[in-house]
Amino acid sequence: MKKSNLKTILALSALCTGLLLSSTYASAKSDKNCTGLPDHLALKTALDAAVMSETSGLDFDMWATVVNRDGVVCAVAFSGQDRGSQWPGSRVISAQKSNTANAFSLDGLSLSTANLFSAIQPGGSLYGLNSSNPVNTKIAYKGPSKKYGMPNDPMVGKKVGGVNTFGGGLGLYNADYKIIGGLGVSGDTSCADHMIAWRTRANLTLDYLSTVGGVNSDTERPDNIIYDVTPNPSGGTGTSAGGFGHSTCLNTGDQTLLPAVR
Image (cartoon, rainbow, N blue to C red; front, side, top):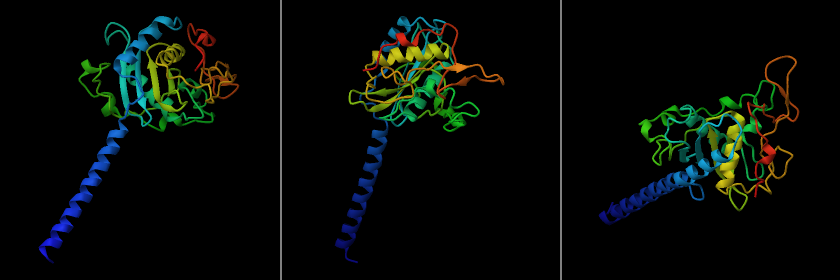
C-alpha cells in the first residue's frame, strides 16, 4: 500500500474516532443539562419561603432535591440554620421523591408521589413499583457530609435513582406545559412534605399544569394529594376509593388552600 493511501486511511480513522468521542461527550453533557431548572440558591429560597408559609405537620425543617428529565440531580438544599436542623435521612428521601415524580410523569399526565401511595399497596394497581428503581447508594451517601445540601452536594450531576411513594414529590412543568424534571421534599409528615413541595414548586413557577391531566378530579390541582382512604375491615392499610389516595397525617392541613396551578 502506498504511504499516501495509508496516511489517508489513518486520517479518516482518527476523524471517525474523534467524531465518536465528540458525540459521546455531547450525549454525556446533555444528560446533565439543568437548563430551566433551579440552581441551589433558587431552590433554597423557594423552599425556605414554602416552609415559612405552610402550617401543617410538625413544623420541621426540610430537605429538597431537583432532578432533570434524565434523573440527574441538579440541586440539593435544606431549610433551617444548618444541615443538623432536619432529619438526616430526609436528604436521600427527597432525592428519591424527585426521581419518582419525574420518572412516572409525562407531558400529559402528572403523578405526584402522594398519588402513588395506595396504588403500590398489596392488591394495588402498581404493587411492586417500590422495588423497580433502587437508589444508587454509592451516589446517595458519597461524602464528605459537610457538602450535603450545598451547591457542590455529591449527588449533583449524578443519577441517584430510587422510588418513594408517599407525599412530597412533584413533576416540574415549564411555561410550555412540558415536564422538565422533578422536585422532592422531605423532613416532616408525608402530608406536610406534599404541601411544602407544592408551595416550593409554585415559588419556582414550575407548575404549569392547567392543560396537563392528573388523577385528582380538581382540575386546578391535577396532581394534588387525595384523601379518600377509608379503614380496611380486614386490617392493614386502608382502601382508596379511587385507587390513588393517601392516608391522612397528624395535623394534615387543608390541601384545597394550596395555590392553583398555572
